[in-house]
Image 1 (tube, rainbow, N blue to C red):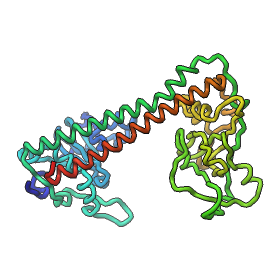
Image 2: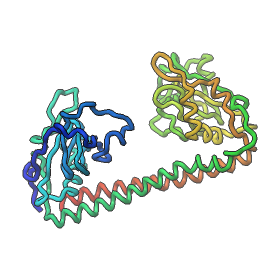
Image 3: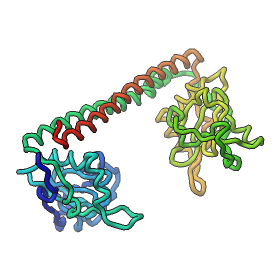
Image 4: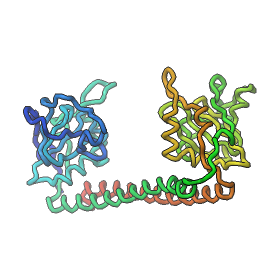
Length: 380
């Protein structure tokens, strides 16, 4: 297998739209390549006057000049327009298969080289010109071998996509099971009747950090349905009322109340009881005779209820904050505790399925990376 500079097998392909402004406008993303801009962003993010945009033909390559290091490159599926921020080129299809070339240009080996090809200010993203990109060395087997490699990698990606679809389906099982069991439940009671709110965590005392002490839970730790297992942060608070008030106990549910992560909720694991929470996390303390913590967390994690939470957020000077009076008034199902427990057990089963599928998807990603590495070394 020979290796050639990219410049030997591609050529510039850049012309302005001019009068052809009625063509669809595309963006180039790192995951999906070419996407119709209006469909991808759900609103118009491109200029109203597209006469100065670039015209691409079906089969043209285009990449984001300052985002190539993220993998923002693709092949045009049809004639269309793209922003001048993109660089466009054609491949010599007599020497290189387009599917093979795009695979190589998005491979880890190529991505690792892009930062060295860019030019620009130190503190700004560096632009990669086509001339600079042309110095990239491309392994070039025969066309037949290129097509075989591309087909293998396409098949591996298709398998990954199916696994991701299964994960998406699993993610919706909890909500579907809840609606099936309790969607028509006759007894709806205000949430505030069955729990206590601790609406704010520590501020002043949170600066007392040490290598010993209780765990300090921040909003980044609270995922939807779990408390993340990232490296712990410890705090030794002074003996004051604020610290005592925001100390967690077994059976608590944590809810993020401000910022971009607003509305994330999880039942506190018993191992984290005795931790403290930041000012961005609220403690919901349900009455154990009426509602299980895992059941409460499952209800608050439902997409329909989550939308109500966000809709009721009050905006302060900088960040939105949840409206606790509104939350207290939410009318929700309150089935008997044994029925709640059966539902929680069902959720645990779903979580096990998701963990197994996530592990399988991770292994598949590793396999695809291995296949790419071997393919472009001529070992596939």
